[in-house]
Image 1 (tube, one colour):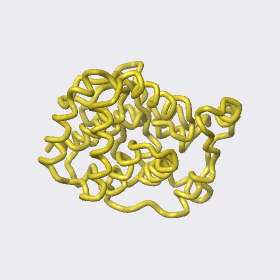
Image 2 (cartoon, rainbow, N blue to C red):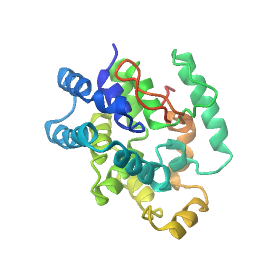
Image 3 (cartoon, rainbow, N blue to C red):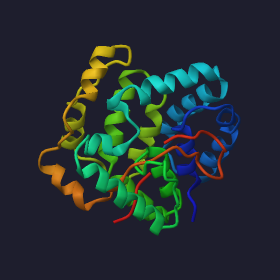
Image 4 (cartoon, one colour):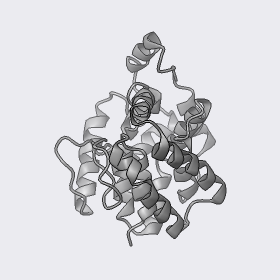
Length: 241
């Protein structure tokens, strides 16, 4: 069964376009129809839906770039938070891409398999119980991203709160704290941003090695719109063990 909630969330995390803005009513219908999101978080998500639908497109695009492209700690590439620039990253992407293709999701040569919108597209194609299990593996990353966006008063926080709420199990506090302990510079602080991009790969201590046998090790995505929901952005999901 296709889970359209994941398709809608995938599109909402994609680069804003006029097509994306026009598709917001479709997202609302899809989210209301499946009713998977807790009411309190859904109210937060409504704020993002309204901002995308009614906001100035150039402002929306500029905000998106400042948040997700310029700020490493908010990267939408999952392996950025797990492997950094280590050698494991390349093999993890190869494995993740192979996992997608084994499950019927073909991606282009230029697409990076650990991009969150692509991961969510993949989840939308899986049985719901399996998608919730897969979602639990990077839940600590989503929790940290949600907290960082909360501090920035960004409505995008609601997407990551939704993903954590839907995950089959909740992330461990120590894993979240490890991520939140990493540098998180403001997008306007160019010197701090440069320094962050030069940092050594992230390590989670005892939990770091465990990632090698999990889905989270195989995540990286390119630039693809959420299928069937909207012909939206071209921007940069997660596999099954």
